[in-house]
Length: 388
Image (cartoon, rainbow, N blue to C red):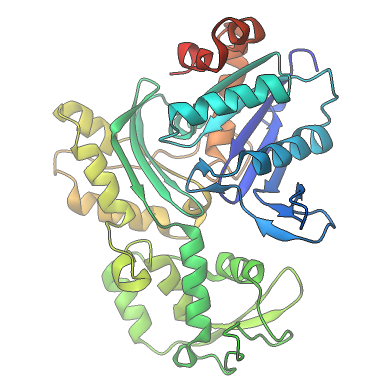
């Protein structure tokens, strides 16, 4: 593989992968594999799209790898089967790490890459830092709306301020569950009743799977401009809208339900039943913990929304409205727009991977990668020498 660098961004729902030297193109990240494996009765692991029967397991939850054997199986499938690595001729790897990854997990990943995957070199960096790199910045406030968590952090000169990190224990998966709850509620305009096992009925199938519910949520979710606009919308008569899922099913959803699902990010306690701040409150709190007034102002004026939830229609405008109502009057809160020179329309969703592709090429040229000689000398702790 020579000097090629495989960039891996691993999250709770997707593992995104591609080559650093191919960026920027419309096709990157080239691979988006579900972060899931099938585990059969003999405890053998396989990728989520394999034909092997077994129980579906997700090795990553809220940014932490819970089962390293399952993660190894998934990474092997992505790198060797999908990206074309050859045994004995592996390339370098750039890892996009979730915030708050501990020293032990970093060392475990380093050991895995050098001893199992036999990489000649590796580098890793926080997803929050990489997300800013994707927007051409090194300082700012990052709100990463993921599958099962929301991470908020301030970044200054390429370093995440760990004291400012705010992790919310909800994410897009909770929105999907809320979507299912609304579908089961006959008062939302649904004509069919749920089946005896509590599954969601549809017009062409006796039940709606979790994946179908996820697809339905992505089709209809949106955010109101303000809480007042939200209340006015749901209090008015709501018509039914028909959405066609990727599998061909046609589902009728009350037009107000999409607003309810999006509103859950701003009213998690009343709508999701989860105690804690909403995403705008967490962002203002994260910036507010900085001691220097100029730094706080800098964070308010350089915010980015990234992750799968960031592409919800109307969310950036609503987030900015909420943040401005809580931020100091002297700070002109603003969201950094996607740079025009980036061809991919999914930069906010894939920001960590895009930033990893940018950093990988620079770090390799400047010899910042951890190489095999470093690992042989210091062992897994070598990762702390070069990766801050």
